[in-house]
Length: 508
Image 1 (tube, rainbow, N blue to C red):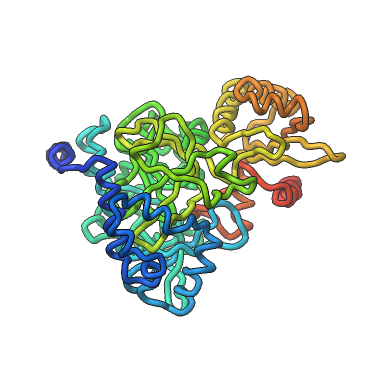
Image 2 (image 1 turned 60 degrees about the vertical axis):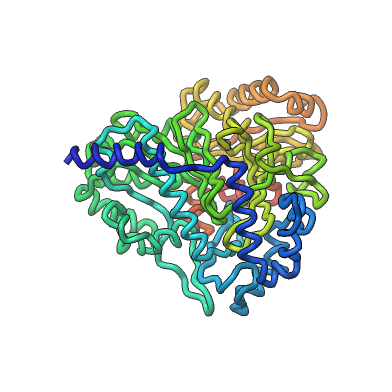
């Protein structure tokens, strides 16, 4: 059978080299023109005079001048809600929209409903193929290309509404798996349609030894829980006793690095980790080549047009929203090692949409990025200016210093006696002295971040640490009816949300 694997691997290597590829900048110009031409006769396109924009010499500048930035609340109120409830055609995109992806991002109480068109599903498939082609850049053995892939997402059984179907993007994608991929796809459509996550995992456990899994895909925390259940169910020491040909984990939804230490305990040998950036709004980026920072290549030729706003106080308000007068830049103008808010327009009728993530370019020429955090998960209540990427690095340092695994954490700035403190909740199965931990964490952040050090000398009076089981985080998600899905506990909480979380965690 490895003969087939050799053929597939060689074919991928040749295809990856021979398929002509536009430069990212050229591709983006073509994507924007396509979006404007395709949507010019929609209600949105006519309202913003897309035909006039198409006549301008500088397409990008004209588009930015004519169309405002939209966060979810704005575009939903003005456009998507009416489109959805009244079943409007040719409203923000030609035709009607059959699917809406439910997205809360974190454990919010109200799900967002993001339109997903047939063109977007095709764009997701196209980027998926590009990722498959890029597998030839990794040092996988030939037999890897014959194996099956376990895609653990939300249920593919979508909820039928009056005029549309809805579910999480992973469930919508799974319900539209192309026929040629079904022979590789596990757990298969029948098990994937089970709505109860625990029952779905139990069905996977019962069938696990029948499958020859070469790669896992999904959110790290839920895959980790699945692997633990499989190991327990089959009474083995690690997952490689069940799936000896497991070579890769394709991580999506959150950064993998915080989960690395606990994840590796479930393996018999190291596997390749590949990051992806699949959001409810589309498949934005994928890891195309191995590198130290696990940078992902933007999907610049698959129905998504990108703009970038520098993540600075001049452009972003205290709530994490982009000022309407903030100037965006395209790929040709971005700088490496600078944080940007990412703005997208897509074939789903998403226009200059603030997705809520911040990114940094690692390689501008290759359009390779890393995700650095969320615009609203930036802890700056008292001028500490802590980004999620700094928090992740701090947790990695604490793991090494205290010999523990920290796959989950959250933090908030809270007030006590009219003074602010940072209260951290650490998710770890190993207990340690919380006072020593808080002092070490505080020292590390002061060394890493000058603004944080300044805040600690003024308004930020204390740092407090509580340690709870990672299961507390999972229970919090389950409480919000999101178990197994793409919703996660935010790294940074608002004070009001944190008080609710604190009361919940104390009772676990």
